Image (cartoon, rainbow, N blue to C red; front, side):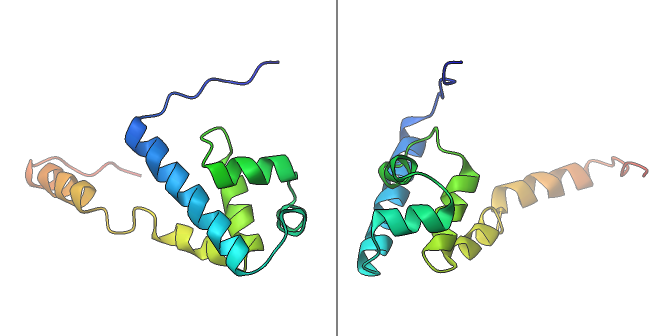
Length: 104
């Protein structure tokens, strides 16, 4: 079975690469070997290297596991889309249009 090709926007790729670099720097600052972090995260060293390169083919769960293995840094995921200003504005526009809420 071949790997699924991921189509990703250049800006998103840049964000993933930056995140990978930051994860690698966090590991190095803690003086943790790749073998130890990979073992703690339950992944292979090759997968950890993919995370540190910002690969879009690595699952978000793997990124979270690596961040957790670095000392609970996975808690930052709770802030993703927390303050969704655009979404709130769009929701407010729909509320003003006279539509009823769904039953349910």
